[in-house]
Image (tube, rainbow over all chains, first blue to last red):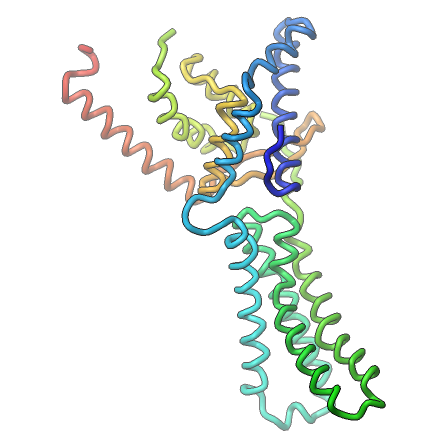
Length: 205
Length: 112
């Protein structure tokens, strides 16, 4: 049965259906059926696997005008990116210029920015999870603000190419570290709590 | 045992699932078994009829599925009602009450 949907989702559906068949088999054995009969009864629940795959594919598609990617990736990602852009543009305007030049303020400001990026990563991933996004979509939505950083990095590197060439490589490495690697790690760490589905233990009903 | 036509079963299936999930989260097989038991077999779900419905309801935001480990040590995807699902349950109940009241007024279900 091929569903032709996101691989991770397809795997989950396969596991879920297999679990259902297993429960039906065990239930039938418990009611006195032979192993053969129990297996036949369980499999009889699906007279046509192709038809079931079609029905599941249709059901698993989002209803309404928005595509699954729009709800699980683009919208959550844009929300996280919007928050990051607001902070990047808003913080320099809100804080006094003297604070930027004060070395004592560097650490608290850096810590604050990194914490905000943890929150943006968490925001993107949590919105994606609420929309039914898989792990890949959640991670992508969480680190989506990196798109802004990459564009800044490219602009900075291009600008530096016209500057002193002796400092070019060193400058690029530092720029990559500051604009991409560190925020990227913070965003990725922020997504972590939202990559797992509940793994609670509960009594079987 | 009474037998219901396919269209009525289909129309009531979502309500039945919402009703059994109101009390506690259940996985797919438990949902089917609970509905069958509670309706004395009048409503009967197979794997093929249940899961497309469950996935559609989850996509609508009425239910939320999560993998859980049962006391038997096996992993099952359990469904619970969301706030939207509870609202839908209340709305569906009202609609079905109106529907049956209308049928009753039309000719009297008891005399049908």
